[in-house]
Image (cartoon, rainbow, N blue to C red; front, top):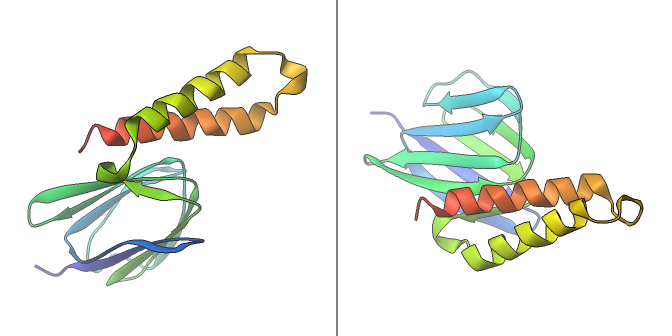
Length: 134
């Protein structure tokens, strides 16, 4: 079976690299997208969600923020602000971030940057969900 190379990059550098991915499932703004070797070249915007990488019958899950996926026939480059594999997620920290964001959203609306708090809440909920795949 032909495989893909996947590289997930943040402003701090590469955080995940796999040379033998059989299928990569992305959460794009248009919906879920599965990518295998030989996929048509594409650039897809990503939403806050997870990336599922299957290799040797096992799956890795990586929580990501918004960004872009550059898909080529043999390689996927993913550019996001932040990314964490399920094993690296600090669940207590994610729960604390969710509580903070919820507190700000429920508080005085004049003092809160609502969009920022909503994004923080989505990121925290996503990290909590992906942590279940440890």
